[in-house]
Amino acid sequence: MWKFVTGQATGSAHEKLRVPCQDRLACIASHEHAAFIAAVADGAGSASLAHIGARIAVEAITAISQLGVRAGRHDHDRVLRDGASLARTRIVEEAAKRGVAARELACTLLAVIATPAGGAALQIGDGVIVVRDLGEQWRWLFWPQKGEYANATFFLTDDSALDEAQVTSLPHDVQDIAMLSDGLENLALHFATRTAHAPFFRGAFETVYSSREQGELVGLSAALSTFLRSPAIRARTDDDVSLVLATRRMVGS
Image (cartoon, rainbow, N blue to C red; front, side):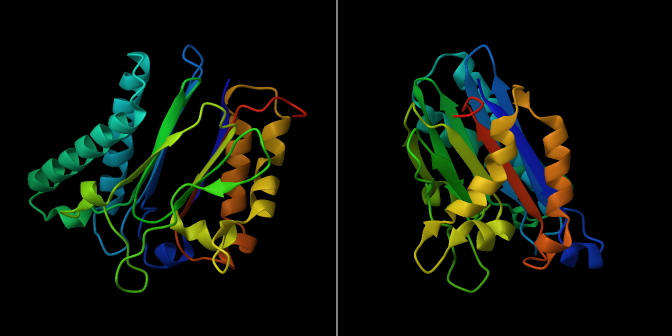
């Protein structure tokens, strides 16, 4: 059974501008289906309603993913693509309702489905999904997507978003999943070697492994959010940060 921890913090740059946290995340651990579903969306800093777009995105793709798991579907990549398509449609509809351009709700999107029969992962934009199977190797699924210019990326509201979406299958033996918004990329990735920074993930998961609970570890989620607001993190980034840590490893494994 999956257990997970989530953490989120508003970046110091946004606090100075009195802008709300533009990241949103959602996680579901299904005991009945031994499945884990999660999504992380990072609102574009230049978009005035990015936090709303991010919320719509994670709600839409996790809802579609949950329906797919309940229906026993094994085409998880198709489920995620359908979820991203629905998310984009709902964002465009919300923008029209508010009388603004869709780009004002722009966000990136990460999503995963993990079941005993395998799963899938999807990424549009930056941020990163890192996994580990029964071995000890941490590996990223997609290198963060960067645009033509510095600090640019792709967004779900782009006309080409669904074409730019990267999707891959996950094996049935994935044990650990980490998902993070781009504010934490410099801590979690080694850019010179294009590898996942294993010490970051070992340290992050240590207390998660030791818990005997299932589902969300609420106390650890609160502690993680506090840590993400700490001077140690703020010294490395002034951006909003989100982190999801999920595992099905037993205590001591």
